[in-house]
Length: 74
Image (cartoon, rainbow, N blue to C red; front, side, top):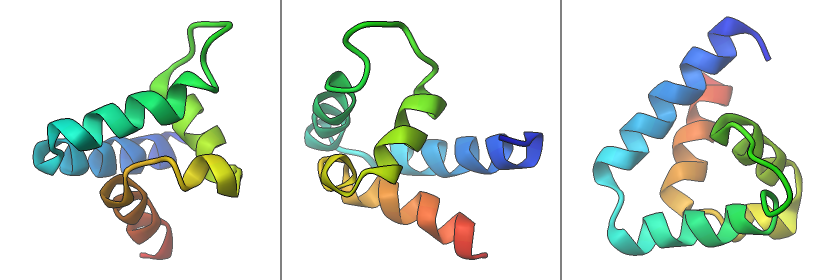
């Protein structure tokens, strides 16, 4: 992942986090728990992996997915 892609990810993540409810944060925790139970990983890597799998992507908070996808289409 390039530096520009990382910066874009963090902008999207922070934008989502400022609006996220406790329920959204818990949904993110649950979605990432199935990916991160054996190792400590940067959240950017875990979310990127979750977005590649439709079943796991469906577990992510919709607002976070929308923020990230909006950056990818811009």
